Amino acid sequence: MAAVSSFDVTSTVDLQEVDNAVNQARKEIAQRYDFKGSTASIDFNKAESTLTLAAEDQMKMTALWDVLQTRMVRRNVPVKNLKLGDIETASGSSVRRVITLQQGIPSDAARDIIKFLKDQKMKKVQASIRVLRGHDFGIALQFGNYR
Image (cartoon, rainbow, N blue to C red; front, side, top):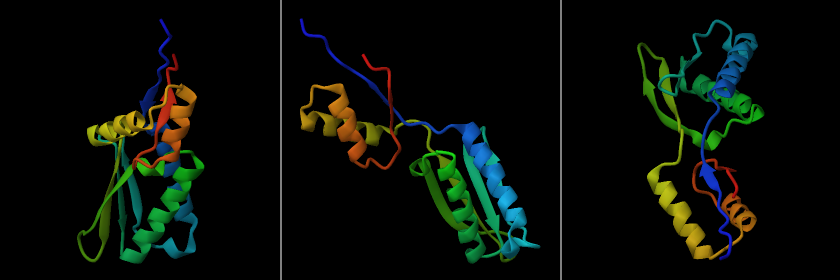
């Protein structure tokens, strides 16, 4: 009987790296001239896996998101797993945005991955992984547990 090769596909975000990126972004915001005297903030809730960005206006919110996104990329946090919420108006003229960290693969994406692999009719593990990396499912994929 032929040996069956398999592997696991996962999608996770390292919360410690997210925390490090948030701390670096906070330090950069505290030093930037355009944020002097600003009440812009980034709050990270590990229990709920959410980030809350708050700023005075839309322009500062965009700059805040750019700083955070740059720090996340430098720390190898998959930005695809960040689900951006709508920009809401908060008290006064300030704005707020909640960003959710996607942990795991949603069932819709899992169905798409399985269907895509079956349509490719590949038998080799390495070829399957290469094809999966080349296709965009809207989330970052990691591979492990090769058998």
